Image 1 (cartoon, rainbow, N blue to C red):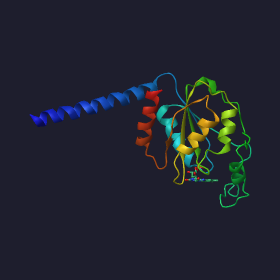
Image 2: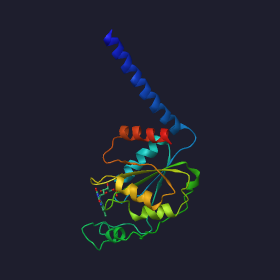
Image 3: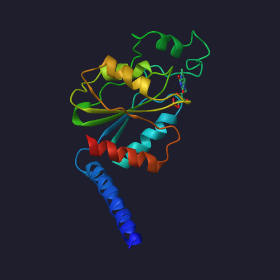
Image 4: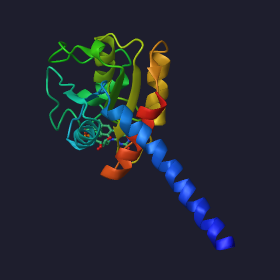
Length: 190
Ligand SMILES: Cc1cc2nc3c(=O)[nH]c(=O)nc-3n(C[C@H](O)[C@H](O)[C@H](O)COP(=O)(O)O)c2cc1C
């Protein structure tokens, strides 16, 4: 008898989990697809962004700097490198190659970036300040060499308190299934 009750409880838990997942996936498949924007200097964040766009059917948009970052620009051991100079200056706003994106068409925007000095690269600020992102749900995601995402998200929340931020997710080495589960939750909660 105990075994039957336990089995029933397990089946019910599993179907409840499946329902929750379905709701997220239904939202993903319904009319409003998200926008997946990302900046990626060496391709790691780009890969995570492509997976999110594939899973959600969303539109992928790369934030491209007007002037591409060279390997020397990315040298964090050089305090004079372009990335060091930008990250040392909270007001630095590296120019975008293109600002023609119509972000207003979306309710949910995933925003991806590599962690630089425990923060979002300044070009993310340029992107945010170049588009009207009010009344949309902004979902940060990031890749890093080991740092977490929360400091970068807190800084973004502090800089843009009028925007609707979610806590986001670090996607270092995340499997497609892990990304699917997370994205499904995000689309369910909004
Ligand atoms: C200028 C610079 C600063 C970085 N700072 C950090 C950091 O503070 N913490 C960390 O874990 N990784 C740091 N990294 C590593 C990147 O976050 C990591 O390699 C990331 O996955 C690169 O993503 P991308 O290939 O999309 O550019 C830094 C990399 C660069 C180029």
